[in-house]
Amino acid sequence: MSDMQNYDVVVVGGGPAGSTVGGLLAKAGHRVLILERERFPRYHIGESLVTGMTPLMEELGLVEELDRRFQHKSGISLRWGSDPQPWRSDFSSTGSIYGHAWHVTRSEFDQLMLDNARSMGATVVEEAHVSEVTGADTGTVTGLVYTHGGQQHRVTSRFVVDASGQARVVSRKVTETQWQDDLRNVAVWGYYDTYTPIENGDDILCEAIEGGGWMWGIPLGKDKLSMGYVLPAERMAKAVREGLSQREVFLQGLAASNIAKTMVDPSDTSADMKTARDWSHLSDTFYGRGWVAVGDAAAFIDPLFSSGVWLGTSGAWLAARSLDKALRSPADEQQALKQFDSVYRQLFKDILTYVRFFMDPTRLREEYMERAQEITQMYTQSSRVGFIALISGIGAVADLVDFDPMGMDGLREVIMERTEQAKARAEAEAAATA
Ligand SMILES: Cc1cc2nc3c(=O)[nH]c(=O)nc-3n(C[C@H](O)[C@H](O)[C@H](O)COP(=O)(O)OP(=O)(O)OC[C@H]3O[C@@H](n4cnc5c(N)ncnc54)[C@H](O)[C@@H]3O)c2cc1C
Image (cartoon, rainbow, N blue to C red):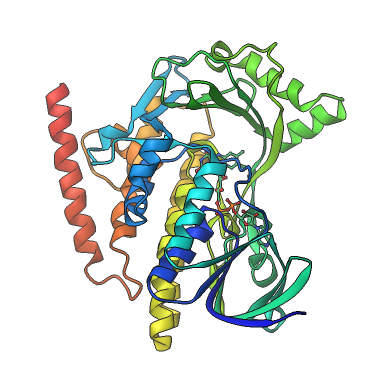
């Protein structure tokens, strides 16, 4: 063991959630260390973003850079439900000022976010592998042990933030997680250099596959398409037992599709196939004595609506404000962290409830939209506004922007006012198109 360091906050993981919480806390004047196992840029899946992230990207000063570097995303094109006609939903139809999101190459996006955390004042150590969570067995986390440059280091801190993604380095030791058995899926995907765009070429394509599962098509640029097939884990296990390769499983999905198969040439084998477990889960608690969890380390919901990075960074934004409060005023710690857990949990629950409803591909389009409208509680005349408000995260923007770690004072009024404004805009738009 080489040295003993001390920080206000140590973050495990430099992905989008870790760099957000670490950067914001450093900017607020706290001493922050981010420990990242890999050297960036490193590959990651999760390439399609939603407009609900844009207020945070504004706060981080990254919108112009994202616009400059990455493919714009206007909405979602679907072939889903009992009606075989394709349909689409456009981000701009929420009436929000955020009309587009981005499709990103994650190695570049994550590097941008981590560099930004550095420039906000966080100390970042890459190739630092966290191996021990100090105090986890006593119920109070007090620090970490990590390996870097062949040496073990010990660090203590007031708070440890688990942003280690699916590794759940801290949360697996200090809380239980509820695996959602009906959403136990596997994804298999690859990248195509040549492809034919769909009609609305900068949308994500989500297409239900007959017999179960769905496919995504994400245009990362003119010469790069990410295409994946999500299917139940037991079906993948059966295919493997039968000796099928990952590519063969992917091609089965492609052959059963209607739109995805028009985009790529199935005989193009230049794309290496990748696979990952895609099993939704939700931790029993997102905080405890000395620790907080954000991003996939807290919960993960099926990527059907591309909500992972939005959920992760939103939780990190909430956590930064609650931890800032707790560090400045220790007497308020419990309330601030409880408020973080409650607002953050609601985001996950809304998306989980809706993914579960949407996974049944036999419903009518209007049923999908009405259910989304019920969840967002946006009482507009147009249920399609409720749908896109939910899946883009725009419906939750007021909860995020005006988050008050000390409670609900004033928040309800702000939400009601913004809901009224959104309602008026959507009704004006519906009247204009009628
Ligand atoms: C098939 C699939 C498709 C997806 N598609 C989308 C999509 O289109 N859009 C979207 O928004 N989301 C998508 N997601 C979800 C998205 O990938 C995640 O939600 C997102 O990356 C979570 O960010 P994070 O910062 O929590 O974790 P991560 O991005 O995973 O970052 C965690 C970091 O922690 C580091 N780490 C782990 N263990 C240690 C350790 N012991 N010591 C130090 N560091 C450590 C890792 O190296 C990593 O860099 C998809 C997920 C899957 C599985």
